[in-house]
Length: 163
Image (cartoon, rainbow, N blue to C red; front, side):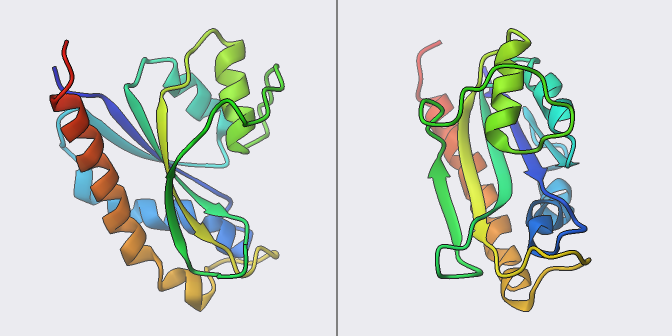
């Protein structure tokens, strides 16, 4: 059985580098379109939309998002989310796109958070305005490759599991 993998870009395109996820998804959606068991969607700031879509029982989630600047704007990080350490505030918040709020909403709706791989880029500027900073824009091609690698890794691991 083929793994069902949701690739989700999140972020606010009106806040500079926070639009990293949607920008990466402009390329990812075309590259994984038609892939068996993979769906790629730009959720923008639609946290509840993502939470509801996660109720469909995905095996894995690849989340593409801007991450806080830790001193190296434009650096792409790929890591597996630790759902145990994320805020577990229960409840529904239709206006929040914070991943922890999305996962809390999913749990409040009775869903289970799937294995989650995050492809994130450290931001340089998240002030009001359209467009990514030059350094974050330069990270987009590498992030697209990282998403493709994450999907391939998740498929490979799925192929090796017993059903």
